[in-house]
Length: 166
Image 1: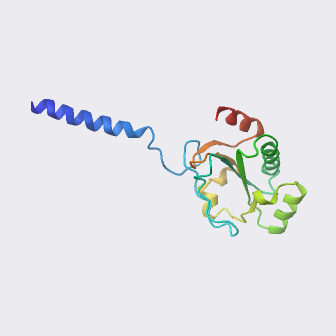
Image 2: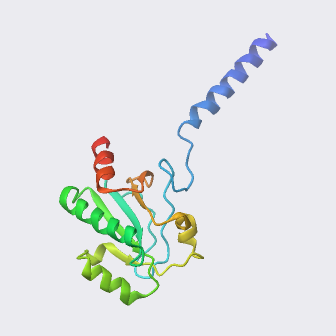
Image 3: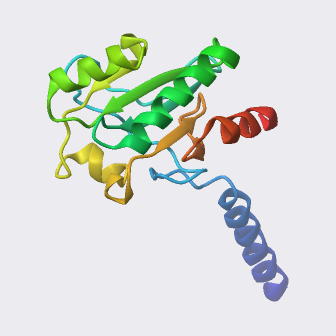
């Protein structure tokens, strides 16, 4: 009788522990499936945590005028979203340029919506820079309304593929 009780208790404990493991991945990170780190202290915005955004996705993109690849990707993604995903994806592009005038002039020259572009003036010592691991290069993250990263390092083609699945 005692053996049956022990087996029953151990079985119940194993089932309880394994039932929660599939959805217990609830930490911040920069990979698909991770919660996106909060964006804090950009001066003109309140802290953003990407949750409860009315079933809309957020494209978080880091770029700089001095980095031709990230600058071109910023324009391409903004154009793609304006063309195909208005109302489905909010854009939040953060410039890493140190000089605000260069940032403002680049946004104007590139024909970007200034309301979606933020000047981070962040250095490689900033918390946001470290949290998003930007030392590996500037990147982009598609974040769902629950704050979970669903794709990263997007191009217009990759964005179209991801959105067709969601």
